[in-house]
Amino acid sequence: MSDSDAPSPAAPAPWSPPAAAPTPSAGTPPGWPATSAEQAAPGGNVAASGSPDDLISQREAREVADIVGQLSDEGLGRADKTKLMVRLSTIVGARARRAGAQAVTSGRMLADLLMDAAPHIPIRDLSTLSEHHHGMSGEALADALVRNATRATGGIGAVGGAVAAAQWAAMPLLITVPIEIVVETVAVAALEVKLVGELHAVYSVPVLGSGTQRAAAFAGSWASRRGIDPMRPWTIPNVLGIAGRQQLGKRMIGRFARNLGTLVPFLVGAVIGARVNNRETTLLAESLRGDLRRVAAEGTIRPPS
Image (tube, rainbow, N blue to C red; front, side):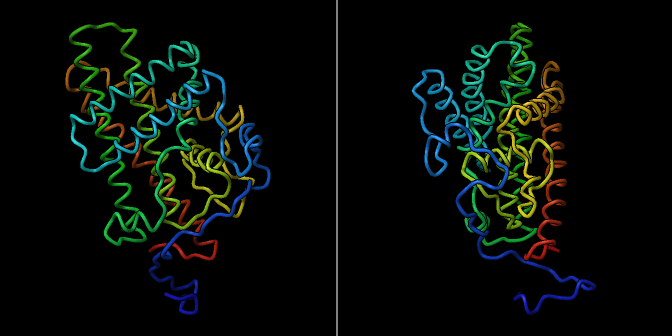
């Protein structure tokens, strides 16, 4: 439908998005501070630090993002998911040992790991999403993304529950049990951040800034369960600062608490974990899509029917 065919406000008509989402211009949105690494690296590319700890953290971040990309594969089997979760548990365990118990329980370690990984998470643009879903667009494409995401996060809950149940039955070392939930929380949060970014693409809502800043905006959108409004840059969620990281950490801890049902012995934990993740991902998507429809309606693009 062309702009000249647009219906009057009293009689809205179905809409389909443009062939590709608007390409954001380079630069930083007003009021959005650059990170110290971005200030040192022209163009917003994060420069590699010479610190051994920083290099380790960057390597872990890339590995986490790679795992998330594989976990989002619709055809991934249970055995492969379990292997990926074991690989992720190694990364999270190493990060937790370096950070300390207080950083884990406060959510700081969870927030830092998610923020480190977020710029590397593979988020597809509109044309790629449509191609991967046989030409789908609009609400049909958004439905498909949410459906796939809930399956992926539900599958992680089922795998995590089964692993925790087996550990509980074989060797009830309670100090190691919460790490399973920490791992699950990181995996689910990262997959949902990917969903957040791709839903913004489906509704053609551009997010400006460097890769790190856009990732921070998507993480902040995940934490607040609100869509991003590019026409109001002062409202764009920013978790690059201390206050933003604290908010993100609280959201991670809240998700951690809801996943504690995974610790129930035997396979009951797997069922609970799958249901909790499925429900939480669905609620997140519903909230985001409501905001994104509103943002699209207020801009130059009409929302899907």
